Amino acid sequence: MLGVILGAAGAGSLLGGLADLAVRRLAGRPPQAWPYPAMACGAALAPLAALLLPAAAWPAATVFGALLLAIAWLDLRAGIVHAALAVPLALAGLGLAALAGAAVLAAALAGLALGYLGFLAVEWGFRRLRGREGLGRGDAWVLGAAGAWVGPGGLGLMVALAAALALGMVLLRDRRLAPDAAVPFAPALAASAWLVWIAGGGTASWVAP
Image (cartoon, rainbow, N blue to C red; front, side, top):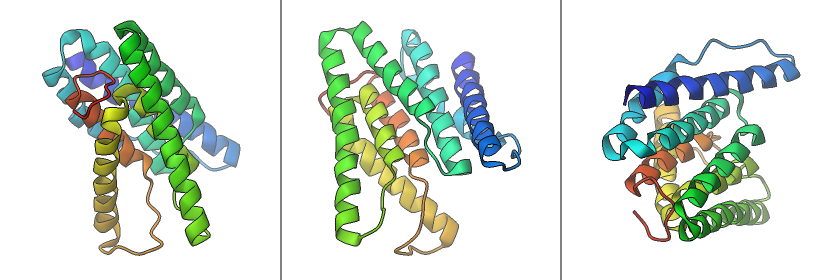
């Protein structure tokens, strides 16, 4: 259990820190302090895997948690979702599903496709209706990649939880809900993906957890 906690918190912070450092170097901006809050959040969520999943699932939980934490932290600090983190997240989910059999792999592939294409449709529709961006392409990457872990059955709950978390973030930060408020959505998606994956028993599924 301790390995899962430290692995998810430490590895996630390390990956996010390195990615943020690379982005800041390319942009000519100075590096920021090390992400102790991100490590604390990872340590707070990681025990759920140790408590609710069998020991055989702990290595996968460490990989999933670390990549989610890295994605969330980078979006919070730099405002981007990098493919260098989203692609490994998707591939790891598909690899885990392949080990579980053809049925689970099919659910993982469907979750990836529906998650990505669903948010892509929302992004396009919002731009057509409002004439401006309302959802970043990186959010579609995250939902698709996490969809490979939770499957189609977990996508609806994942998006609902993420929307509630993002709304809470806005209200805590601004004390009001402005129509043009900009909120990093990837951290909320990451947290909800972690919770939904654990609730679903650590496997991609066609049914909701």
